[in-house]
Image (tube, rainbow, N blue to C red; front, side):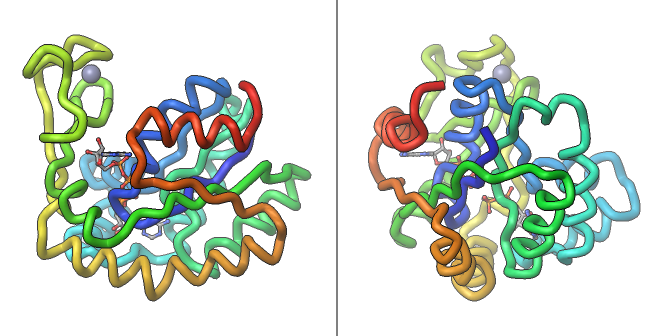
Length: 216
Ligand code: ADP
Ligand code: ADP
Ligand code: ZN
């Protein structure tokens, strides 16, 4: 399965990518996670990206295209991958198309997750993650079964992203509408665009996606 999960910040891409990766035995590729890892490791690229991310702007196309191009060559991507947060500009979509053609790989689908802007702010400001395994949670919408303990790994350490605050969200939403939303007609023309209601319950969104994609 080779899939793009497409939608604004907070739409639920990461949440669903984790579930679909398990279901279809594919790898979740989140450019946001990769950039944050590079920033935490203190690499030159990571430190440059960090400031851009914290301002809520998009990191340059060259950087993210290089990251993805290297990553999809790894063995663990052979079974398939779920792109979460890439591509985000027309230039990235065109680079991905060239990259896949060179490797004779085809994309199964692009799934757009539709969520109104008004809901996204609450999603983003309530988001937190298990530091140990990366499982995603939300203050109101998705709490661990036992307070303070990760359902997946039993970890008790959680973190919030520096850019998940009400001010930065506005720049990120603007970047989505200005630079990323124009990719919808691009994929529509290619006949691979599917849509789900991202405002439904988390389990319901997963079911909608599986119904569109067929059994794993
Ligand atoms: P994205 O990767 O698109 O930025 P996330 O998957 O991180 O979005 O989801 C943002 C926040 O919203 C997380 O805290 C997640 O638990 C919560 N969330 C995700 N999907 C839903 C949903 N369908 N309904 C309610 N909350 C959701
Ligand atoms: P969200 O889904 O909540 O927007 P991400 O983790 O996907 O969060 O992205 C966080 C930040 O990382 C973005 O605001 C942007 O600065 C940077 N980023 C991630 N992916 C890309 C990309 N494909 N192109 C440019 N910048 C990116
Ligand atoms: Zn965990």
